[in-house]
Image 1 (cartoon, helix red, strand yellow):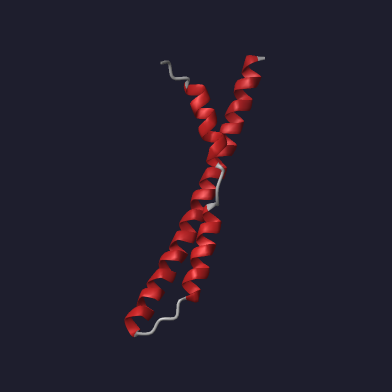
Image 2 (cartoon, one colour):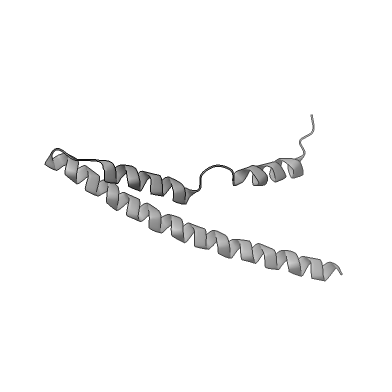
Length: 87
């Protein structure tokens, strides 16, 4: 059986955007953490750690999205240059 890498890649890219985004996952986690009612000091500390980790996750995902946008722009420019070079 021969693998068609072009169709596999195309299918992967098309299905990649399906489902919730990282932003919606983070928002849902934030809402759930804010609903927690700690009953002890240790639970309160755990919730604070979760909130801190969530802030770091939010920052990291924002940086990753900026990097993705930059890379997508570079790919677009390279594709345009390639098309212009073939003409």
